[in-house]
Image (cartoon, rainbow, N blue to C red; front, side, top):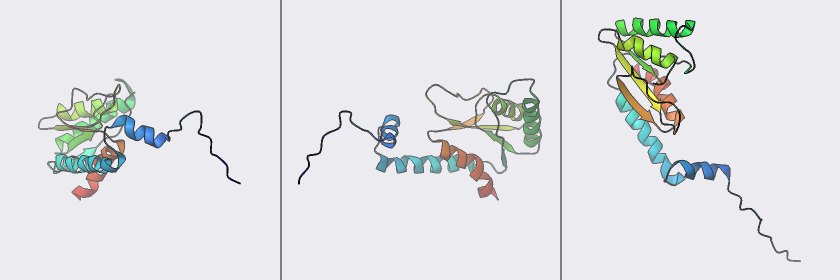
Length: 150
């Protein structure tokens, strides 16, 4: 017996496909080159720093919060000892860490920003920055750089 297959009333589009095409104009098979390009440009950008420390923190912390004040103090101390201070480049703890480094004589304040349509913008204390499309490439740059420098 042969059964005829009915077409579904609603066209199903797998979620991964809709995500893959909604963000970029490139096909998934070519996306690997965009990702690879972010890795190459990220490592090239970070190569210029002999010593660097990454400070992670919440974008929602405000002036007066204990962790906010501690991040500024830590960044200042690192910058005074010759470390470039790397953050995600956003507000909150990231901004206060960038500020602590930027306000130190010869301090270097670096922001590795994620490009989001309506979200985070680079804070005003970042002196040098690199933008990323993908969270995971940005995270590798923030964490992986420490291993490369050893």
